[in-house]
Length: 68
Image (cartoon, rainbow, N blue to C red; front, side, top):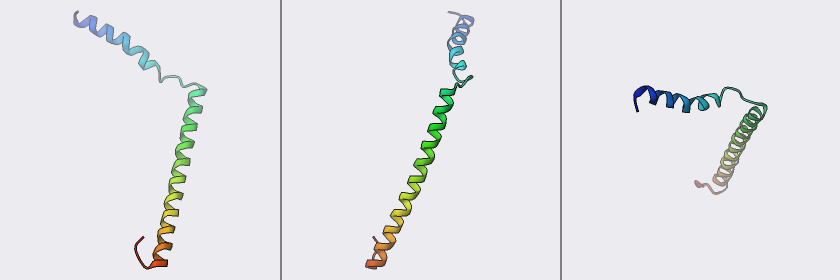
């Protein structure tokens, strides 16, 4: 197989992959919005959990005068 044949085959195989991201439909956009909302919710819950953990540790330290 010569170089020209290889390049032609590679181009044929790569073309469908290049076309996949060009046109996002409404379902794709909806999925991206759902992913973004879930990421933001996860971040908010993580922040709240960290604040609760810090509050519990502070209360424990005040009550017992030790590191908790």
